[in-house]
Image 1: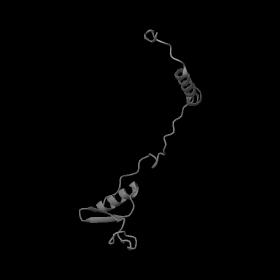
Image 2: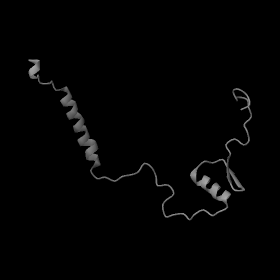
Image 3: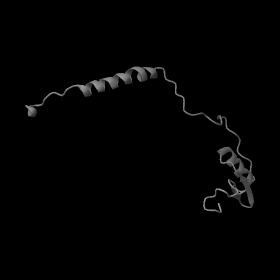
Image 4: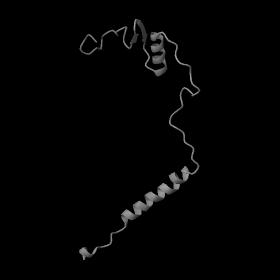
Length: 100
């Protein structure tokens, strides 16, 4: 911005450009996603990208785990542990010999 606030400034036409320079070759992109960045770098280098592997391009998140008995832990065992801990914390303490 040329003014203090930049409120009334006109946007710079080169805003967001990312230039890739390898040797004498140059390439420009406004994207920052991995596939497009790699494509721009390979194009600027003048080489062919490696062949795609057999893996899917996006494995997905969050990682899905299969568990048969996890619901038992979540809905039965964990609440029992919490209730038992609460019950033990509410129990009056037994007096020790030094308290007598």
